[in-house]
Amino acid sequence: MILPLELIGVRYRDIVGPVTLRVAAGDSTIILGANGAGKSLLLRLMHGLIAPTEGRVCWSGPQPCRHQAMVFQKPVMLRRTAVENVRYALECAGARDAEAESLAALDEVGLRALAHRPARVLSGGEQQRLALARAWALHPEVLFLDEPTASLDPSATREIEAVIRAFDAAGTKIVMATHNLGQARRLGDEVIYLHQGRVVERAAVEQFFRQPAAAEAAAFIKGELPWT
Image 1 (cartoon, rainbow, N blue to C red):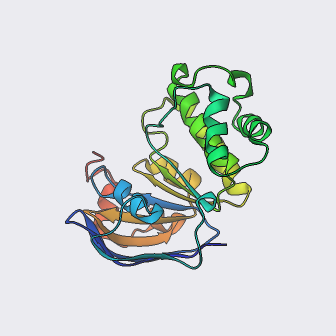
Image 2 (image 1 turned 60 degrees about the vertical axis):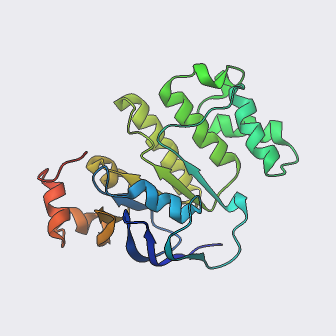
């Protein structure tokens, strides 16, 4: 296991930080906050896509690329078929039987029937499930999710949430950013509430929604802070 992940005095310009926190294996972690709170940047810092301007982001051990994955709000699709999108990721990771593993990953997200369809003609929900299939094929220990259902309708959202629960059930640590209160309650075990780039509260999900300690979190739950 590569967890825990530690952020020690992390800042990114004047947008995020200072943030000091420890993320351990196990419970699903929801990073909650209004749009513009810094959730996406915090995920990118955790995943290593960007470097902090101050502080340190460190894992408990080595972090080969197969150990973590990230799925974005708007998935990036290669100009290839669905199965070729998954296979490309596996080939980059050195998989021996990329074709079979790609099809198995598509099975897991309910896209096997669309395996040979061009990825870019799929619906928004199907593209997001394909992005999750690429992550599934890599068997990550931790999966970072950045607002994965923000632009989807309720039906597609339910499908994506079902896949996220499957990751969780398979033992993958989920770290997901969202501003959706209902989704946070459905998928999270703990909430990290971010306000203006800073962590102002961290609590178990039921405790957070029943009795938030931070005034900013309480106002957000009541709808007194803007979602966007």
